[in-house]
Length: 184
Image: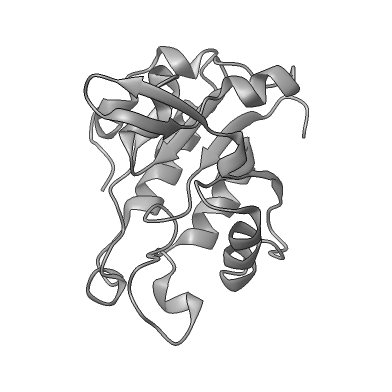
């Protein structure tokens, strides 16, 4: 934890990594510009990885992608499926979600006002919708890796909102319109 930094919580599967396609190396399945995105985000945000899988697989994937040993940024901590809770909803039925209150209750520095979560599944931030940004899923890495620029665009958005006093007051569903000229 670094005093004065906001918190960026990131999912892995289909957010940072295409976990269903086959490849010879992790780099082939890594979302384009991942390291550039994490490096840029690290200037203003502490980085947390939260995946609905086991800690063993989180650690393995972060090694495979070169995230856990990158010299330009550090991951503050990992959260796995054990930090998720089960809720019942009319829309989705019984599901597991990622309640940010788990983080806020443990670390006073992080609050709803300085936390944003990126996930390809909107239901994962059902408990904290004002802090969630639904990222476009990164699938079919072999086909899409030459054109996917989502992380570059989101890095620019995070840079733009870094000075906001309360990022939970922003409409992250319309993040592409935060800048008048958009994020190309």
